[in-house]
Image (tube, rainbow, N blue to C red; front, side):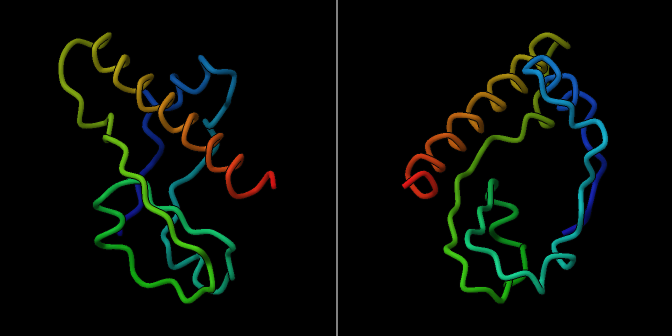
Length: 103
């Protein structure tokens, strides 16, 4: 998988929720090959299909989120899609922690 910069709309959407991701980066999966994770979560079907095997004892999970970068329409319609996906990811993350981490 190739790496990309962080989408400026994603940065703006997260700032609205009080989270600054402006210094975050998109890293290649190879950078994590030697880490034995507890969990590996893929969040889009494309990543699930093309990510190389990661040698780990990690429990693997998948949840497909729509890619808001592919949204079309007015700026407000596109931002609405980013907000929708942000909120879906937030809900998924909270439920994941409640189910698997906060035992």
